[in-house]
Amino acid sequence: MAPLKLYGLPLSPNVVRVATVLNEKGLEFEVVPVDLTTGAHKQPEFLALNPFGQIPALEDGDEVLYESRAINRYIATKYKSDGADLLPTIPSAKLEVWLEVESHHFYPNASPLVYHLLVKPMMGGAPDPLVVDKHAHQLAKVLDIYEDHLAKNKYLAGDEFTLADANHMSYLFYLSKTPKAGLVAERPHVKAWWEDIAARPAFKKTVAGIPLPPPPSAA
Ligand SMILES: N[C@@H](CCC(=O)N[C@@H](CSO)C(=O)NCC(=O)O)C(=O)O
Image 1: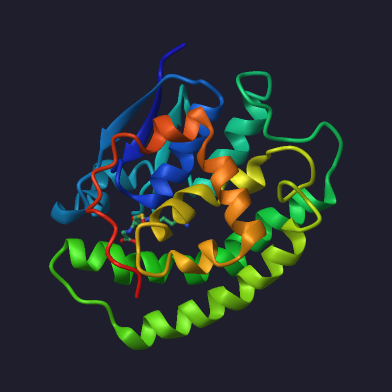
Image 2: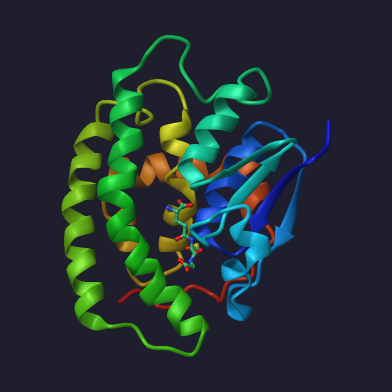
């Protein structure tokens, strides 16, 4: 089988979301760099893979996919018997709910915090304090709901680690490198959940090579 090709940048959190699942499945894959700084993601060669001009994209033989969560669902389904099984064998209400909660409640608040507190400073920019305050306040309310849920569930879909947990990990990792890491660390069950999943060998492998600045002092 031709190796899987993951198009993007290893530093990109949406690319890392896919690398997390590929590593959980123990699948060999090649990262094909797509340099956002040169606009390569808007050139015909990449647009032929993802017409929306965003990374990641994945090539699996003749199949080409984009949208990291769709890629992950495809991998978890097609390669169900490889590595960690990320999908319960019977329909799981909690899995379906928390996959969507990540996409519609966690990500819309974690993403701007990571961008303003990590990505912009790495590119010489400065955080917009109004954006940071707004999304930190909103993420705090979201994580209070996670805290209640994780007081009753070891993982988001219940007793087992699933795709719902995996899809959170890249942004949880990046958030932990910002002054807003306390949003997780100050919630005991969320903290315990994050420490548990971050200790997974596959995830350690995924983030091992990511060049990040040392965590700043907590704000
Ligand atoms: N919903 C999509 C988001 C991809 C995305 O924003 N990718 C960014 C880089 S990673 O933060 C990107 O490609 N930005 C360039 C652009 O949007 O033009 C997914 O989950 O794959």
